[in-house]
Length: 392
Figure 1 (cartoon, rainbow, N blue to C red):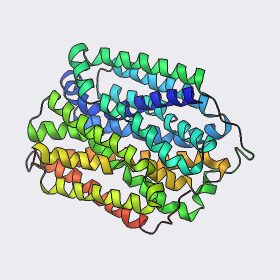
Figure 2: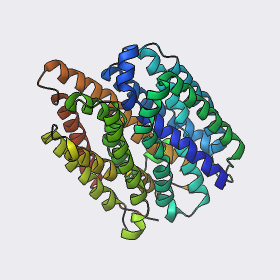
Figure 3: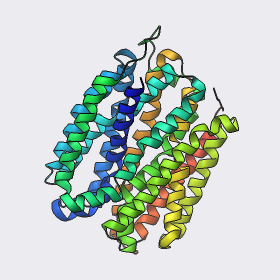
Figure 4: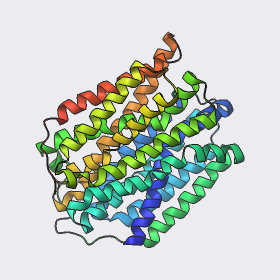
């Protein structure tokens, strides 16, 4: 089981890498194949939407087939295949198609690990294990920042993507060899997603899932690069450093959130408090978008750190699931989290394009993005305020 979890962690490192690497590739893709910021926003959004669209069948497969085959087959075909398509891209359309494939390939990885945690370990430590999984996996977020910029500078982006395709294929093979499916439970395969949606206590948690991940994922995964380039005139190295620092803050945040529900005796108020800090950071970025230096970097880092509540929200929702619906339950939560993030990526691309066309300075479009994320998060927090707190 330990070897299988280690392989799933490696696969999740790749998943985090693929959802965030476009921010660093933005300048070179624009120069070589004409993929602008709005095209990359669409590509990033498609990754999240393809990932989200796969969640319901992935949940069924986890409960019926098991995590080993589900994760290995999809990562091998979608993840490695999509990276190969990206390496051969000759325009924005090819990049979008590649990102869709990669999104499907990455869709089962984290949920396979969560399924194993839920079926194998005590429910009380689910939040901690989920936080550790995401925290270690978020090294992929860091790898897609300054290290990626250095590799692309040395070898070019196409050779880099071919290398990623090979690495992804090897990890998929490792999943097939070492992951072990936990024992089946009585009633596995019974029930449905509708059984979960009838649980009213789950509704505010689903709303929180839809808004908690979008700001950090959208800014770190896509907009930090164009923001630094357009507003501060940053080069690839400076963008790589900014994304590295924000990515590191997100890693630290995942580790910090993990054990706090047991230390504080609450999940609801931990999640609310952390995301109120994220909201304050978004408002500050909207108010002073041209601050630059350590002010902007500190705000983005704090946003990344406190915006890492994703595993804790999953743990909150997990507390309501019956054992035979764990697979479909965690993937339903992931559907709301990743699906909403995909939609916001597409929406922010249009907001950015509209505000850029309207003029008003280089910072104007990014002020619009910060305000959009702030309003979205505030609305979600207002709903989540009425949620039922539950710990294991």
